[in-house]
Image: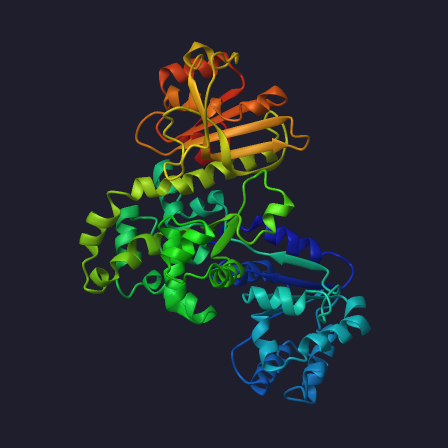
Length: 513
């Protein structure tokens, strides 16, 4: 059963039903589901689906010719293969599909170009000459993202400005990913997403009839299963110096997020060199460079700013647990690794993924116009802000920047609990902040994936932040919890419409209960 990818399929259908010729570039990292999405799109339509191979140019042309001629082209009466690529592409408008669009999908297109670097220029000339005015739709698909972005679509390259549609496929959302496991509990769906993320190939390896624990043991930790060698396979396919990249990814998976930290933990030393390696991982879609939601362009172009996070949850899980215990897994000690290295911290490990799920939930609420205002940007916030003295949410690794005593705090939603309370300015991170276009409305979110209810004191910590901005902006608080909320907090939320409590069931469903 094909699951998800509604937006991608709708995009392709809209292009297919357009009168003019269409040249579509669809690309994304390996395993993201590009090929299966295209095959689903092609169902019920006359089409040619050609998958390029890593082979000689002559062999590639022979295979392409065979695919085209098999469709009943008039030229098939006289030839068994085309003499060159130009003749083959010129034949596409002659496909005998009546008044329906001539649909040609070329999967792993970079392999074709690797064998013959003149193909993009040839396609450009043919597109300008005949194909753009023909009833054709050509889809070029590939996993080599840097090649497609830099060699095909960038300015001064052959297909620049010719593509009528460019779609970069990313991993599935949480809400599509959990459709693979409809009978899992809400908590197990979050755990599943924390382990596998939204990559369809990974999700298909798990058996929905087995528990998360059984699946992790059988389909990740057991030598010989598909996912056991997945990370090494992908890195060797895309990169050289895999040992160095293993160290880099491992450092990020274990909590190093700043360039200097990553460089130090990976023992590379030189931050400039580390930055180059990280850029390669960003291009592969394994790592992302993240900035605070309020960061400006000047900060984003600074190579030393921002933090690095793994975008692929499975990579994060593998390096946090399996890679660190690889010798034991090679020896077959699956139960021991799970019991002693994974099980005690798996719930805590899933907290980061839960934050991502909560952000996706807020996106769903925006689509449904179910938020108190429409935000223009949303993400994590990190930097200096006011916190209550002793707040557990401050970053213990960084010292407070300033200590200040507030003798009186006139904020109706906090009451006497925080009046005459010692506050300080400290480095901190906020799970979710959404800001309106005019900057006069803030939605501040706090996510708790813990085995105890969201505490009233934690809400007070959240409400204290951004105190200076409260003079000119309206603030709303969304509190997300796996295990419910303390009674006092429920009472506070009932009395204040600016405070919203979101239960695990509500979040996982993607809509308010």
